[in-house]
Image 1 (cartoon, helix red, strand yellow):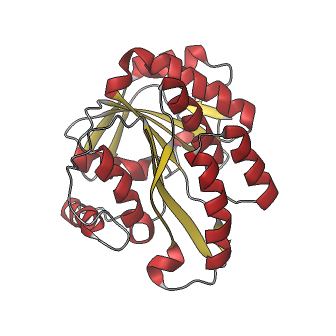
Image 2 (cartoon, helix red, strand yellow):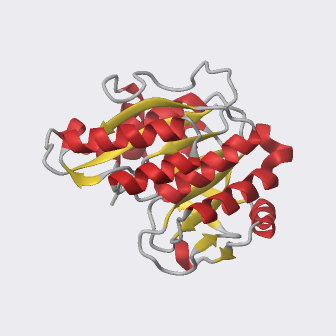
Length: 270
């Protein structure tokens, strides 16, 4: 549903997303980025809508030496556990298999008071799976810890974020965090830009309290807000001092239909 099932077509679409100079980075990876990137915020719509925006974050991390990725996103279907870690197994995409790092999943779960192990929670959702082909495009081999959230309140975000930070602290140089989320959903383009810009300011400041205040005050319909907040908490605890916005665009900016759009951002925590 979100990208081609043919490996060559999929690689070509990802390549085009990187080479797109209007919404993407305008060139293929690797980047020449030397700074430490603790994590990224990445959208999860169909690649024809958000692939170019997503490519910016993956371009930036393409020269980073990470081996493990902790991925956090929203549970769109509300099935399974409130905060669900998938503990073991392999995720298959048209570009190959991606293994779950069971020991890291155990480390995170043991430090958190809110997580449960659940496979069924992940069985339908796309939010993490659509990140994988981009990861596979820039890295020959990577392991993942998938986490999806039904419960996304601020206390859950702090609990999970701190658990992630504690679990990866000794391997921070080889671990990347991904928060998978789209921003405003199905509102006029100008309104989406306005709301999302306010929310992004809080993300760039790594201010979780302000982030939740803006969410509530402006009623921002970001689907993975708890995932963004948890990764903000973890990144800040591990040493990040700010977020940097690489690209923001809406589906309306990409397609031209600006009546009811979805907002996408690509942000790195450094």
